[in-house]
Length: 379
Image 1: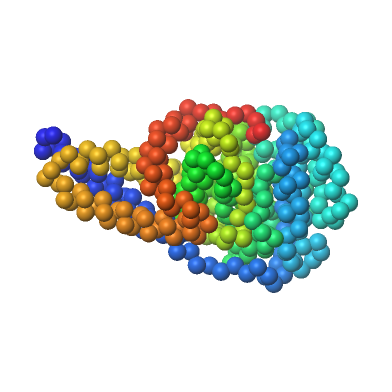
Image 2: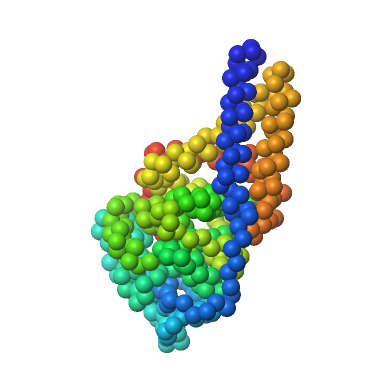
């Protein structure tokens, strides 16, 4: 390897490592060392409306909906919260289950949609119907296949609205199951949350995940709902937050009792399809957010190839090893505490393997940012 080429590769390696370390120190450490305390039995607060959109979820609803309906939440009026399930043109027997439980819960009702919305793909139309029909000024969103981690989920999400916040971001992990695919899905979910929660804590919110998300109804109408991106199948969560969030109106709730768990995909092809659909919305983010995320992704993508090549350049070998050792130490410490904070500590043993595999992740899914149009249906 010539000296000029060796130096160029070394500088690329050092720059990539430097960017990675800065992101971990400046941003990701905010999740790792997050210290806010949330009370389980909190004093009475404002009432909430929980909105769940469902399509062909007759298996998921009986398992998950009762936990949503049995939350310990106190408000200044009765009922303290309501649960609205919007059944969006289901072809299974969901409607019979949803109707059968109405007499058992005074704070629950469901809405039957029998005709699909024209020219509005995805679940934005049923979600809009649910929000418009909500009695209360604060809406909490989750999915039919999600189950709150505890009976204090709503109470803790509600506490995120203190200090005038209009949006609250929560974490929606996947259940731990055997197999390597499960670890990949859970790590990718953790890594995505590490970014959007950290940036929100830094005053740069750019997305949320609809499995565990809350915002003010007035904010939804102020931004004309999903009108700006209603032609896109995905984005009912991240694109709305990207448009409506600012440096001062977003709260973050990180507590293992406030998570909302989902069943992960069990086949690689199903996960690839899901991720391609989700990734396709990233091209619609604000330019500054794309730049911030793109810089980190580029540094991540370049780091390992540059590291391998620069190890064959003896003049810079010792400096390379010092840089590599420093990055490993800083990244490992922050990763350990971030995984612990998000109750994913068992993934730490696989974290460096997953970090290397992120190189393949960028190769596989980055084209979706430019070429994928997303699916026309959400289920």
